[in-house]
Image (tube, rainbow, N blue to C red):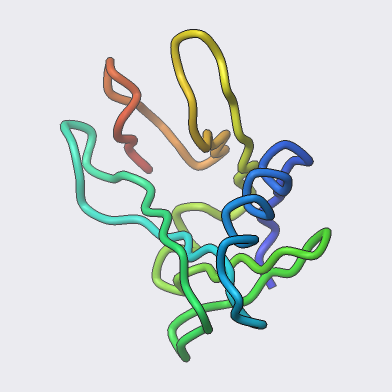
Length: 110
């Protein structure tokens, strides 16, 4: 199992999102894709069940389905949620990042 951490704020937001779905295995799918000027971006989607291409992380009553192909890029990441005057959404503190674009939308793993 990978060592992705989810903060209490992120758990609360995930629970709020999932409260709208009446599916027992509903969770959040986390992955990466080629994106932006730095090369990679995070993907987050609601999902109802894991595929064989995902690893399940359960913490504090929420399910996070992580794409296995993304694990080398996001292992050790801390997923948080912020709601400020200037930004609202999930944030990631990834120890594997070697660079990030100026707008913060994409990252590089060296």
